[in-house]
Image (tube, rainbow over all chains, first blue to last red; front, side):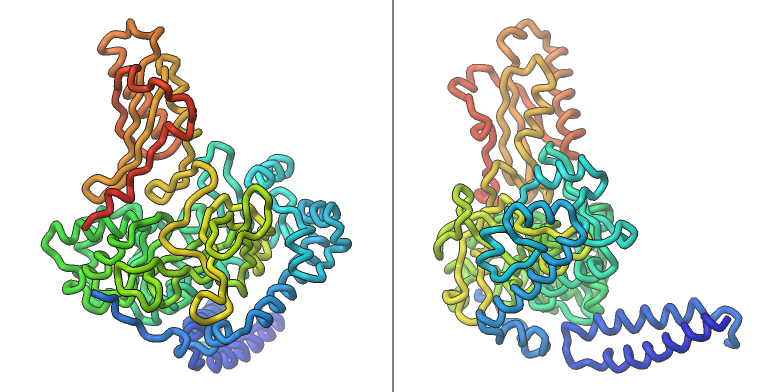
Length: 53
Length: 471
């Protein structure tokens, strides 16, 4: 449980950072940052079992 | 009609501008740093490459200059990789990472008859596989939200099966992977329904087929798909007159890339400039494939001496991928023949180039319908039949499709074969070729007298496809 909480906290931080990257003005990188953000968001989602929806 | 310019990709990407603005000294310094990291990692992890470095005196994998690297690090060829794999299957001893870090594989087609090279890819390699397709396509006009048609068969175990899908995804575009399992007519129906089509990736030959099929249906591509940003081709050469017609029919710029499994994607492209030399109108000079030299080290050498060719000369591409972790490729002799154009003659930027539309082979490999095919493969299929005395093959274009014709002559000592036996022989040869090449070809019988003085393998085959590109 603790591990999941720690992972969850890290992922939440990563999502904030990925959100910032996804605002990039670089058109070549923008899609790749969006892809990174989506990966982090998916990991948060799949760990959400048991949490309040 | 001159092809219209597309939005400047360099203006849209600070990263791309950094590559464009680098001096040759900056670029080579970066390459050297990447080579040093690569060699140190491979010295520690790869028995195959460690042996090559030891043999060349690169102690502990230390490289102090690009010149020393290219002189001391022995090149490898397909046969070397295959022998390594055979001794230590499946990846040989070339892996630069732990076996457990391999999450994806890329294989070559195996149509050489020598065997299939297998390359391990890490998670990072898979991203780079996508990026090394996305990079040229971004420069060719593909953008986030665009609808892209990928006419190359998707999936499987090839680099070309996975790279396009990853590329379109990481650019944030919407991919329709129609290659392989959809007829040309069905593709056209889909394209017309989709609307808003912006980008097409296809082999040279398939773009020709698609264009002909559209015209045959009375559809003018530039009117049916007015939002097209780019057409991107790879794999086969073409005449410039054909390229001009393609641009005219589609109303957008034709771009070309050079890529391979060994490069984990594309190693260069015409960027946004198209297949005509900058400043020349359609029908003028051939354009340039600018090499992505911050991702790959590309040497163009005389295949006999291994020394760099002079500007304007044709040489063999010897490639080193600077970013692959799984199965790196260091100084691999591709067998691909290209005309070298140094960066000073490219009209800006420090990236070297090769001439587009004319990449060939130093051996007798042929690109047919996107597959690498060697005459030896046909030799094996045909001469498995002792009734056959000789054969010759022809690759040509008919109704917009690449066709292969094989003419066989019954051996003199088999002259007593009946008509039915001859029919069965033709069918058996056809089946044997299909089994080895995955291609159905036309097989017919001709008199043995047609083969007088016909002694060399290289003369068994003629490639007449450039003659067939007429729109």
